Image 1: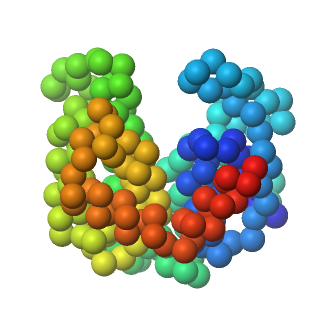
Image 2: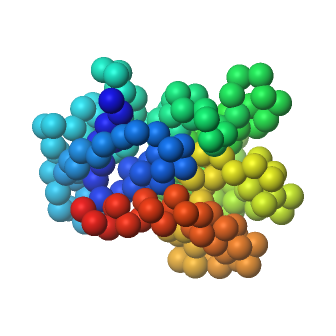
Image 3: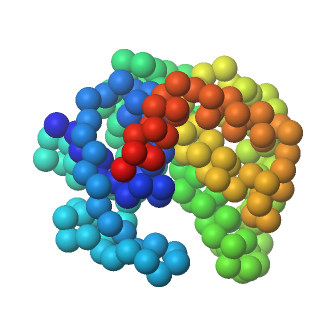
Length: 199
């Protein structure tokens, strides 16, 4: 059995989307988390070591952190082709986009939100504008990060851009808006949003 430990309207919401894309059998266990506005609390039922989400348990195994969960799930449930498998020529690009998300894009956005300048050459990431220029260039060749093929990388990036696009964190862009619209128009996204909102 696969269980998603989930807090509504959080980073784990996109994993309902991914699970719907994969067609994987799963159940949702709602947990409470500490929120940025000071609400919520750590849930003793949440197996994540820091009380955060996402986390999944699958056949007794715990996996947490967004990119690890995405990779684990697409390898475990390859039927719908949402993640290139070992031997697929797109596998390297797929792994790179997952790692870039965790190692560059999230730290870049966090630094921008906290108004911290990223000194060139001293951090393992770059500023948000530089990171988004790289993402934008890939999407210009698109329509998805792996070209014609939608993947779990698009679940991570598409959900993040949908959250921030048009805000001070990420100025509006017709190309990025078109990408977000492509991602959020997918039937699996709509099913996931309904399940997330129903909790």
